[in-house]
Structure formats: structure tokens, C-alpha cells
Image 1 (cartoon, rainbow, N blue to C red):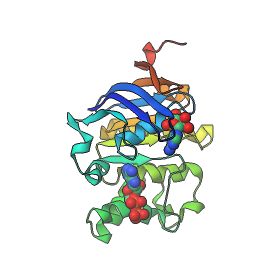
Image 2: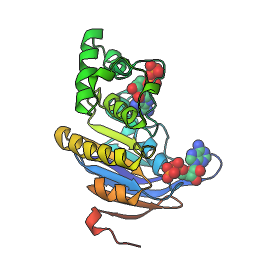
Image 3: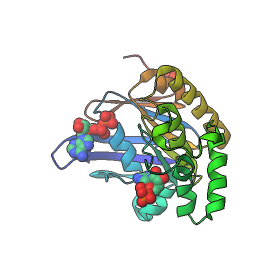
Image 4: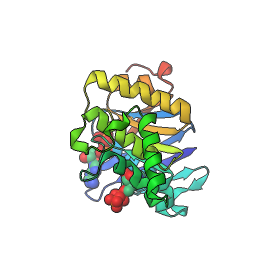
Length: 227
Ligand code: ADP
Ligand code: ADP
């Protein structure tokens, strides 16, 4: 379990992005952070993998303060998916995915086999393996981003508006596939979106943040109060 304990983030210019946030994020479920632009969702997500350090408070992973382990070990346990996939533009699809197993010590052949397996897992035709990111649609690029995030088989996936830049029909497909992947692989997913419908569809639990970085509600979707 990830436990966010009374965390505040104040940026050097004085902006309070997150204000005394406490949240228990259960294992093997999808926890959605939702709220308007600027309410501190991305900052919260980035504190979980230490791209941003809290000003106050602490974050625990399975009971241990995340500052107690090397940052690389922490990040290896957390796949990270962002809005425009963040693919390496000069590498093919298979190499974008295979980079991760290669970094972890797999042979080139093993890494490519793993990449092909992951392409199938996320619903990508393996015939696309030799293409470059710009030759793929936005939805396909997001699938590659998800495949790459899964490549090290991390228990946790951090997803920051991963489907916001694709059209509604493709977005729905990607949402359905994320639900399927979560069920099959049992990942702990923290998912950021500004779209309340997406939050309700995907979330096992939904944390509603409001401007100023305060937690307004934290509940299963069926129990959210409309306000
Ligand atoms: P969200 O993901 O909900 O849109 P963010 O976490 O990106 O919110 O931002 C929360 C607040 O912190 C916003 O007011 C934003 O402008 C501010 N902010 C984000 N990053 C920085 C930064 N590096 N320096 C100063 N302010 C920042
Ligand atoms: P390179 O040095 O080869 O450009 P990077 O260090 O940028 O590679 O990234 C290597 C892998 O780690 C990529 O799959 C990338 O998505 C992932 N990664 C990079 N930064 C983070 C992060 N903060 N959290 C989780 N994964 C990350």
C-alpha cells in the first residue's frame, strides 16, 4: 500500500500545490486523482516516485518511507505513463519497449521477445514493431507507452492523463483495456485525470482534489457526493 501522510508541497515561488494531503492507496486497485487543472494532481503523482519532494509530510510504500530506498529502485517499481506517451522518437516501437529490459540486463533477443509479448498484451499489432512513434496514431502511441511502463513488471503504475489527448472512441477502448490489464496483472494503479466520467469509470476509489491542493472527497465512485 502507498500511504500519503499529511503531505504539503510548496514550490519555491510560494505556490501551494498540495495542502496537507493524506490518502491510503490500496494495492491491486485503481485509485483516481481527479479535479480541475492546477489542483495538484501531477504534483501528487510525482511525489510518489520522487520526481518532486514534499515540503512537509511523508509517503510510505508498504510501511517504509520512500526516502529510505535508492530512487532508482523506487522508480523501477513504478511504471510511469504520461499524456503524449513520451516515447523516444528516434527508436522503433520494439526498441522503445525493449529499452527497459535491456537496462535491467536482458539480452537483446530476450528484450525483443519481451517487447513483442507486451505489444500483444496492450493490443498492439506486432507488425508495428519496426515503425517509429511518429508513424503511429495517438492511441497506438499511448499503448506503446503503457507497454513500456509494464516492461519491468512493476507492481505500481503511475498514469498522468494518459488518454486525454486521444479521441473519445479510442479513449473508451484504452480505458476498457486498462481495466482488463489491471484485472489480469493485478497492478496498483494511480491514475490522474481532470475528467470526472473517466474517474468514475476507472476508479476503484476516487480522490477528488480541489483548487489549492486540498482533498475534498475520497470514496468509491458510487459513494461520491455530487457537489
Ligand atoms: P494539476 O496536475 O492538477 O493540473 P499541478 O500539480 O500540475 O496540478 O500544479 C499544481 C499547482 O502548482 C498549480 O498552481 C501549478 O501552477 C503549480 N506548479 C506546478 N509545478 C510548479 C513548479 N515547478 N513551480 C511552481 N509552481 C508549480
Ligand atoms: P534514457 O536515459 O535511455 O533516455 P530514461 O532514463 O529517460 O532513458 O528512461 C528509461 C526508462 O525509465 C524509460 O522507460 C522511462 O519511461 C522510464 N522512466 C524515466 N523516468 C521515470 C520516472 N521518473 N519514473 C518512472 N519511470 C521513468
